Length: 79
Image 1 (cartoon, rainbow, N blue to C red):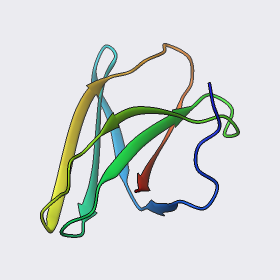
Image 2: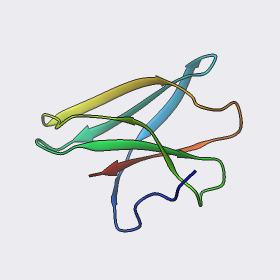
Image 3: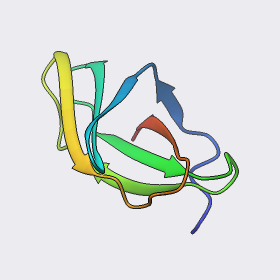
């Protein structure tokens, strides 16, 4: 795992597990911005698990398969 960007902005987000290893992350977006969802098991090393193209303004809902069964932390990073 490579460290995530150190100077990236992080968007406030909500995460929930819906079934098995399926995860949903939601946040409010700004038009024209690309976002990356990153995960970590130790809050030090971050890896991208999903990305968006340039979003419209509004509420974004991303569903994806969790890359690990370990305890994980997620963040939404502004590109």
